[in-house]
Length: 61
Image (cartoon, rainbow, N blue to C red; front, side, top):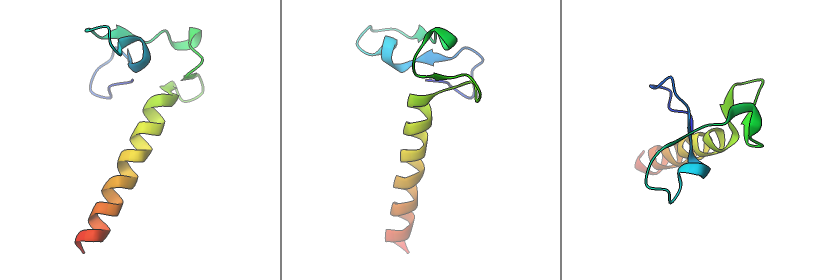
């Protein structure tokens, strides 16, 4: 997953269960979106987090 605060993108799929962070393979990976230079998994996770935060703030209102 791309870490916005870090210049080295980390792959959540390769890193899962390995015990350490693995670097994103970028164009060699099916999950990498070349046009946006982002990992599709990151985009899905980020959008889901925003939806959860939106729902939580609506429930607290």
